[in-house]
Image 1 (cartoon, rainbow, N blue to C red):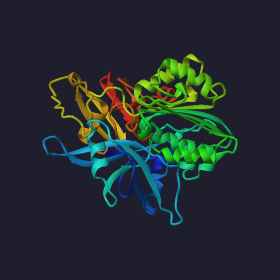
Image 2: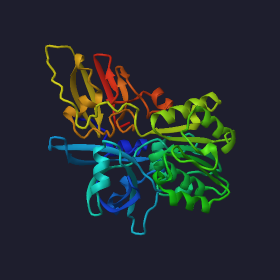
Image 3: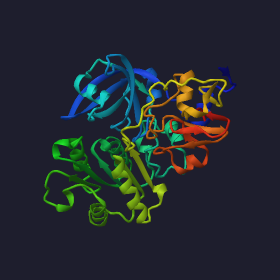
Image 4: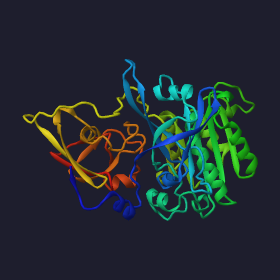
Length: 408
């Protein structure tokens, strides 16, 4: 490793982008939401409050060690959206709330739902993510708003707007934080929410959504769509397919004068909504989306970097990366088709990542020299791609030498 001149702190001050890093936080409360979902509240002490400022819609990565199938300790990282609007207390401390829904076969979510309790400690990464409202921000990047407007929801939307969210299951987690904040920010803002679940017993934050509707009866339209329960309105019964989505957009909500759309849920639903909105002429810059899975459950997860042996007698790529003011180098065999993230993790275990599946965007970096190819991208927007940003978990070198910068 060689030290470069600008430190990470100086870089953050200059760019407004915070360095993703883990901090150990204590669980203050675990609240049961449904039979298979919990809300977890982490206390953030005063000295760490600045590390956990966030915008509604962002997420945190949680890290812990659990035994694998063979009983061996295994580091696990999972990303969860923050479900509460930003707030701080008189003493300067704050809190982070996330919802964890038990997934079939999910090691971390199953453990959390069964065993996590108040007083436990977990490593929590500083909030990240671009699934946030950009309404009224004058084109400022998400990171600049994160550094400048934290814990002041009234500053996040200076003008009224019309917003629509379509969420399914645990996709409500970031959406409820966004809805609360935008509705509170301006007395003329309108928010329409279509929320899909299997049955009423599966609806997360049911009471909170009802309270929000009571608080803003004329400005919040709430439509629960249940796929396995019959509702009085046929439109609100059954699975959301292309036909039902067109009907919902045509009758249930004000779809013609929407400033921003928020889509959050499984890959199939989000992609259906994106395609449908594009066909209706909605500009992609007005659509925010976030996936909780990439639709590829068989993909490997890179928790610490898979083993790769570089043989100097074979052809290799030279990968140089800048992180937290330090420059690192690693060689990667061309035959291994190793991702840049995996290669960097082999020599520097603190390289930021969470999902390793192209969904969360934690491992974002800018290509400075050389070229790469990116397999999947469900996290970066077009303007980021145009500026040279890539997801390192999905990126592979295509030139003999590649340099990426995690700090910019």
